[in-house]
Amino acid sequence: MPNSQNYDVLIIGSGGAGLSLALKLADHSMRIAVLSKFALTTASTYYAQGGISAVFGADDSIESHIDDTLDAGAGLCDPEIVRLTVTHGKSSIDWLRQQGVAFTEEQTASGEVKLHLNREGGHSHRRIVHTADATGKAVSLSLIERAKEHANIELFEHHNVVELITSKGDAEKRILGAYVLDSKSQRVKTMAARVVVLATGGASKAYLYSTNPQSSTGDGIALAWRAGCRVSNMEFMQFHPTCLYHPHAHSFLISEAVRGEGGRLILPDGSPFMQNFDPRGELAPRDIVARAIDHEMKKRGIDCVYLDISHKPEQFIREHFPTIYQQCLEFDIDITKQPIPVVPAAHYTCGGVLTDSYARTDIGNLYAIGEAACTGLHGANRMASNSLLECLVFAERASEDILQKLPGIMPPPELLDWDESKVSDSDEEVVVSHNWEELRRFMWDYVGIVRTDKRLSRAMSRVELLKKEIAEYYSNFRVTSDLLELRNLVIVAELIIRCAQQRKESRGLHYTLDYPETDNSKPAQNTVLTPQPTDHR
Image (cartoon, rainbow, N blue to C red; front, side, top):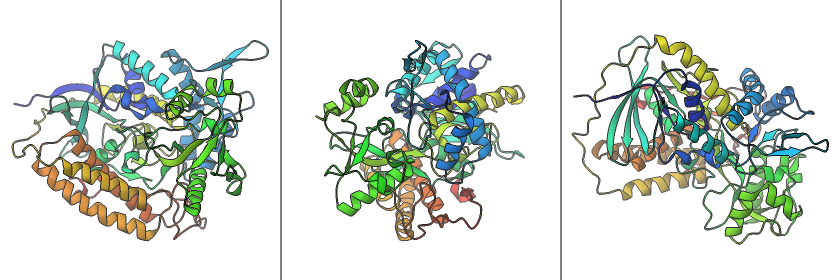
């Protein structure tokens, strides 16, 4: 007999977007489930160092923030979405403070206490609200604490979605729930819901080197694609210019705020180089800085470049960057006295599931928010610290729409349980790890910071082979969390390559040697992929 767990709203993802939405809905007498693939603190939000962009400075303005965002997005931002997001900056910060987030403050000469604002690449003013250099951790812990206190929110750790469940035969396809693997019991549950929200983050673990946690495997994007949603702008994968380069350092980001406070990028001989690529130097947008570093590394055959903030007073460095200071010390790097070895690494997915201004997808009652979504805010290149702002704003927008619609949404019908009758336990788990390694390596080599048609074609050939191998494995063996991630990741890799192959120009984060110029002969167009029936496997 079917044995579904029933909810009003099922939120897949426990980062800033998912938890903010849960808290905004929780006071309205509904049953909410929040799923976390691993522990609640493994979402990308937890690891965000820099902060949240919002206009607070007396010399700053909404129009300036809009202009900076549009400039960084290289002609592909949706101006209406940019304005919508930026104008909600202050209210979003105010809401976080109400949830208990303590942002760094400073005292002015007149004795006034106000928010301390950092400046980062692409921003013409100081407008980054932060908690030292561990903003994401402060936000995550506060939201988790509030969610745990709320009777209407159930939190499920170590729960990985296998597949979304949608209606069949209806005039309009709608969401009914999801099949979910409980990684602790290794059982697949049926979770029914009137509304489902994808807040699963990005897909940077498609690459060999990434600043993201292990959870960033594009799950929501792949789930939505298989369910029949359009996906957009996946070619625009952002590589953060400065990831710590050390054999024992895994995915540790050196915040853009270090450059915002005067950190200089230098070659091994100590000479600066960013002035040769952009008049803004170290404060150029991330795509420009990452390509400049990549160029110097390949040109000179060096393993890394260096980021030097040691010319600043030691007390200043330790107060502004305590997390980075302590982490680097563990690797015998004293950033108050020596430069930091850095390399670019995959960091942020600017594309994703295509949504409207209320976070609605192509499937009825299915929403996508945060990095899993493509809202039109980031265009061809996300500007620093706009990502957490987007999470907060679109959690608010989705909550408004859900609250309006939920009374009219019928509960799902009885759903069938997951069928495991024809599969067995795998005795070849090594296949999963080998395929994972192969995928991430060829994506780094062929679909990285600099691309060519030939490299993309080679990557696609390998993706097609891997897809067949993974599909066969998936059909014969019981699902595991690792297998689900690999299955999702190979789909996302294919979407990135397909989008990159369609763009016959260089724009923002997509740079190809075959088309090195931006095509300004016609208005810039988003790359939109529409799934076919054969993609819904």
